[in-house]
Length: 107
Length: 476
Image 1 (cartoon, rainbow over the protein chains, first blue to last red):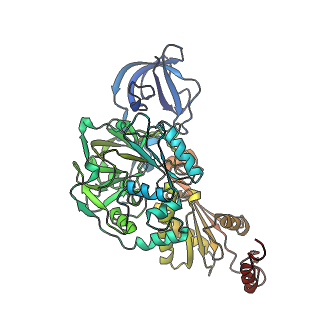
Image 2 (tube, rainbow over the protein chains, first blue to last red):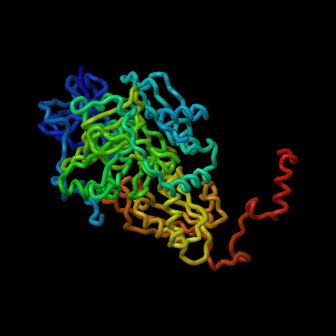
Image 3 (cartoon, rainbow over the protein chains, first blue to last red):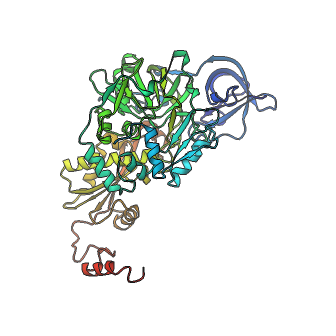
């Protein structure tokens, strides 16, 4: 049975094809249904969708809308339970703006 | 008598026909959320799902306080108590905090699991809306934490989704009570912050976690609103106390140095707005729960849901007290739940120029309100601000768009405000608006102020009385 996963993206072409990358995915067809939507952090290679390979659906990071065409995913390795971000690595990036991650100076 | 737990509350709602027990199997994956959402939008009852797919013996309760009727029942008032009277009861009660009592044995600790025994997927955590970032276990709950420099114990309500068996990720705004203490007193020193999360306490105890009372012990305020102390029990592995009659307790810590992706989520504004982003991680080390536990869900979205009703209660008292402090001759304050916490309506006597602007400045000076609320509508005393139709009529007829709409750019704002540009949302940079619906002070009543053509205002009192007295006799 083809396994299905999904991941969240800012753009439909964000995931590079035919290239090994590390990414956070969610389980959509786990053996134990109670674990549906559990995170997995994997090393994988994505290609255009083919009939045999496992499926990776793409969802918008903001609206949650799902792109109509999925990709195929070949999981090469599990890297851990979920992708974590070190707070210090985010500083100076758009997502590390002071409002969301830093307390205001005045307590 | 206050409700000891949600189970007693559900039984009371059955008597007033304000809850439905669903025994047909319902899927936690979308279906339970869709039912709850439709009930919110159709002013339906609360719902207890007794047969959740994949989870025999575990139940899901939703929509606890999504109506004024259920809020009245929760407060121990008659089910059909008018909204202004519910708000008056709230304001009266919160003036007299009642300390909790500590008990040694508690239903919430009937079952105890630790470390590798903890598996949050063993509960019927719903995928609430299509496209949510995960299954949200924390939508109607209390997160208990302590300020390390004082005895202040904070109860807060911050959304949290499942990541893996022992991890949740949550949105905690840095200017929230929990955010300020975590960032300033734990993360800054790379220390994990101990927390306990109580799910399924009685409705009033739970709502205090989502109410902006400021830096006071919400447990005391829960006692105030219940008119009885809350019973608390000490956690098994963290030095915190939790409501003894809650259904599920998660004991753990917020990690100081790492974040996990969280969101998006359909939010209280009625939209899904905030993007998926790295957010705080709650690591759960111990899980305790009652036999046959009842998980709770609040499906936020288009009003009215628990969030709208709770904040409507809380905002009125906070704003009214602050306006009175400044000597504003305020008559009534109301945050209509239909407007998703984004608007406060104030009725007042008008004695001077610039009053509406002054009221706006005072309201937006309250941080917890400025964060969520973008609009203030100021009307005169003759307007019934609990009647939304009348408020909108007033807005459309008395607010001169050229002179009476005051905008305040570069204001603080929640990242969840839908109309903001995405970059402004990330920065928490917003805009506030005051709609001045009062007549210009210089207009004389005799000649210039338009006369309100309503039954109460344009007929002599003796005619009004006669018409009312004879209403049935006319054949109506």
